[in-house]
Amino acid sequence: MSAVLSITDLSIEFGPKGSGRTVVDSVSLDLTAGRIQGLAGESGSGKTVTAMAVLGLLPDSAKVTGSIRLGDTELLGMPTRQLRSIRGMRVAMVFQDPSASLHPQITVGSQLTDHVRHHLKLKRREAKERAVELLARVRVPNPEEALSRYPHQFSGGQRQRIAIAMALACDPEVLLADEPTTALDVTVQAGILHLLRDLVAERDLAVLLVTHDLGVMSAVADDMAVMRHGRIVETGTREKLFRDPEHPYTRELLEAMPDAQESEVL
Image: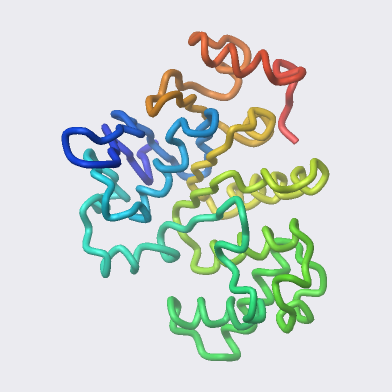
């Protein structure tokens, strides 16, 4: 199956030229439709920076080399104006903190309808119907009523569901999920992971799931890549990496996870 998004030999350096710090070193990953590619590693391993590079969200001081291709389109080095037309439309992102996606002083309805009216050129009534449909799909209770409420009036798990609805509003091909359940309790986390798995199957999404939590990875990822000090040290299917890890660091991560070998898909 051909890749929807291909990251090839991606390297990212911060700091003055010649004396900077390499935070991502020759990373290559392929995302395919209908599959969740996990990217695991401890804090500071470079996994979030890798995801941010896809949408050109790194600071201007970052030196980025390699290739990031969306189908036949090269994203690396693309002018910001063109990249804005990709963000949200073809590639969307869900962050650890939904506050990064939701404005606290604008109703959920206004945020969703403005988003789809801008990108999809829908009329006001069509945009409202689309917003209700999206909230219902991510299982936000009373979606029509929810349109008139503000983000702070929802629980953390509901805010994350709304952020996912925003990300999926324009039917992107690729979803980047950066620690989407870290701030949630276990029960709420399970619900979000169920939702993510269902949406991937329904929409044939290609997903990059960034997390330090191998419990999350064991629940939903189809494929896994383990990252350490900016480099990918091991890749394979979820089953292969959990049952027969080859790299010492992968084994170390698994040993730190209670009952890792017995984990099953939620």
